[in-house]
Image 1 (cartoon, rainbow, N blue to C red):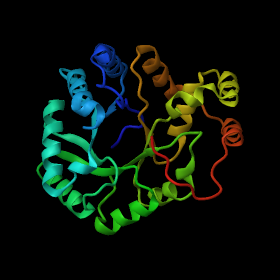
Image 2: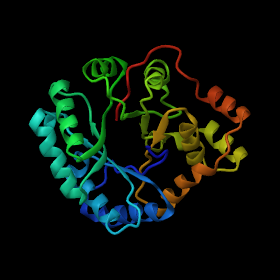
Image 3: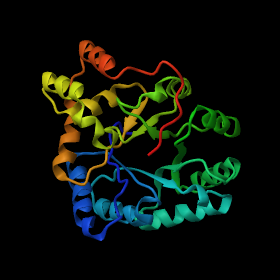
Length: 266
């Protein structure tokens, strides 16, 4: 089972000066009980995976680990080699969920064949994709009817495009949507409507925005933060009570899409 809330690591590993703070944030998050960490070979060109490896070393209960392969590495042999490198950096024998980071030049048939080989060898628990719109998901489903690991996309109150056609399609097939940047890179937190509703609900804007994402059926999320305070604040989103009236107010402030929209990426 995939946890509902995890720690993101995008932009980690890009500066040696921030490494100690990034490691501390992950270690603190695990001590609070965060059950999942998302990373990728792209983040800091592998350094983020090394930081995750340090954070999980010696923990009593290892979190659910998600990582991703670069599209340019996603050939039949390249995927296997990339996974082996990620395993070494993470210091583990298995990645719980391994994703194709976005669709690139490699043929999906080759990537999926490599994913199956890795799963059969016990190197990964399951596989999925990232930044795939509905057309991409339909292509993937035609090639691999067993694809149900996840599709990681940008999704939050201010970017609800996936709700029009992608999310319903995924729900019909029991494919979880993993929402990245659920606070829209912090842009959501200054929205007057969100601040007002959060104050009325007795929580912070970040907690309300995260609680809303997690309340959507078939959706999990992976907010990233490099500070203990924000990691703890985000964890508090699990305690936010979303009443029907509050959900209706959020819909009025952040309306769902009425037409199909291009999949947003950051």
